[in-house]
Length: 318
Image 1 (cartoon, rainbow, N blue to C red):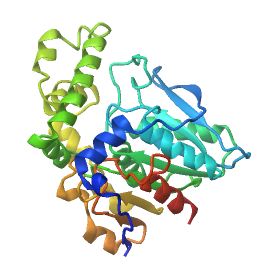
Image 2: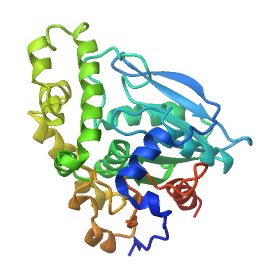
Image 3: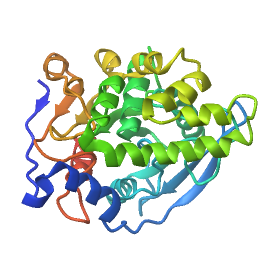
Image 4: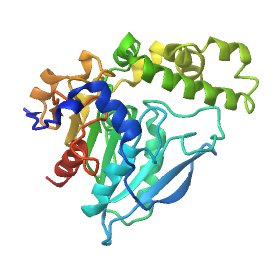
């Protein structure tokens, strides 16, 4: 233990991984949620935007939510999770990573799967408010990897952080890249690549000495994007150096608080390394739940409430 026996059984159509993934990302009606934006000035002069939503009652608990690759705080999965948290007495700080809030960020850097200094800046900004006695971290996909790395790479972190949940998380970044490169994942792969190329092209205007048209033409895959931009912008030798140093699997044994990792067995984004059953069976703080179905962030039960949203709430309240 703690290997969690999953009770998730979706309707027949949602047992298809690709249908569950695409429906949840593109077709699920967006939950109605009142949000209030706060701009956080970062130590290097850049910024991130945080979209807050609040419990009806004055709360001493806040969940910091982290989106996936090329996501934002307005994504349906973020708003759905925030809504149920608000309904159960939690305030929510939904983070938009650098360059993901609809406005190009100011620095050459942007975000990546292991940039935990930005998460630390968010946490510190919330602690300064002196309002919350309990903090939870909730991350999806890339955001899940980020929070697990944050928790495992530090000797200590604020005592207010009590629990965390990582959903559809690529614990091995290289393994997940290889999974995304499979033919059946061409829709997702191309969607990510189109967005990333567009951002690179926009950023070229601000950093012509570092970002060139010839390099832009090299970006024909996710691997090449990480080689051309992610790695050099964030201090890594190349894409594989970035993947190796930031994959959260290596940090799991050092995590000191209870964390739930919810990864569906049929998630086509994930490799076999993303289901560390042996490790979880030996750890007291790593709760690993691997339902047979769910796709990638596609744990549909009803449009109003997803299984992942309910499980997150249950875990945080246990």
